[in-house]
Amino acid sequence: MFGRRKVSHRDAISLFIGEGCTVEGNITSKGNMRIDGKIVGDIVCEGDVSIGASGSAESNIAANNIHTAGAIYGTVAAHGQLVITRTGKVDGNIQARSLRIAEGGVFQGTSKMPSKAAGLPSSSDKEAEFPVSDIQPHLKKKAKEAAAK
Image 1 (cartoon, rainbow, N blue to C red):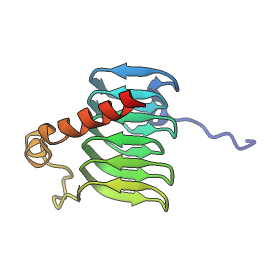
Image 2: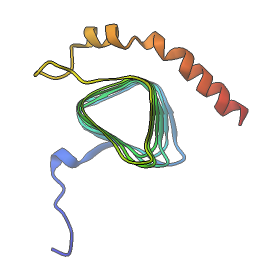
Image 3: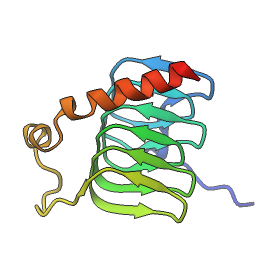
């Protein structure tokens, strides 16, 4: 009633990083995540990851679905859908079953869509396709640029 929608347990956010907050370190979550601040570190999430317009992630991200209106610098693996909104930016390699980029959204890197019906390859396969060492120089460059500002 009155436009309210019932929030299911599946839609509940279990981790929220607010605007103005910076988190450094790796995060593992079974629930959904919302990032409106900044995270520097890898994210492994069994749920969905949503990055708001004020959010940024210098991260390798593996999640069910990923939605970004902010910036991601690193390797992204979505078992379902990756959405880059008109204000979103992804600078790095991506792998997703489905990819949607809105007009104005930015993607710089390579993309792969799995051919296996079962979804993304195992973690050992992902490392072979997108080794973490490939993005380390990129993250160091971004850190230097941010420090210079």
